[in-house]
Length: 128
Figure 1 (cartoon, rainbow, N blue to C red):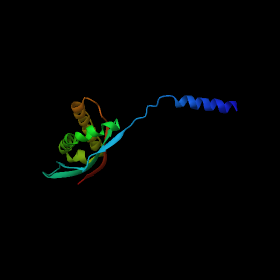
Figure 2: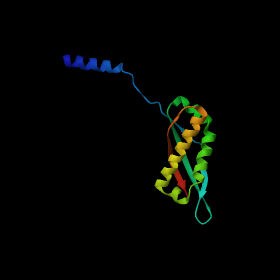
Figure 3: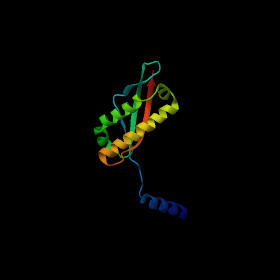
Figure 4: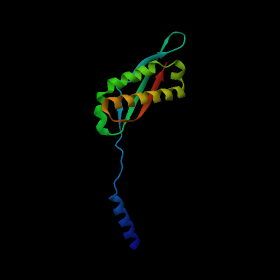
């Protein structure tokens, strides 16, 4: 019986501790991003990408949505400057994702004064 009371007391005490729950939310660009890139033999290739932003606080989704055209343009600009080798390789795609993430974070920091984005994710990537 005393073990039960001790366990119950510990659980009751733990319930009063503050919890640091993250309230992440996701913002997806709709429609998907479709853009050209530099392909070999003087032709253009294209890529279709689904992009999700992991937002640190769900309360900031409206701010991210308001700035979506600016962010979309920056992502399109970065992808459009890539070579075919970068677009078609796994490492290249990851490098592109990192460039896009840094640019999006920078732009939102400029616009809002806050760091709103935790991570940028490519959830779908189709290229020709």
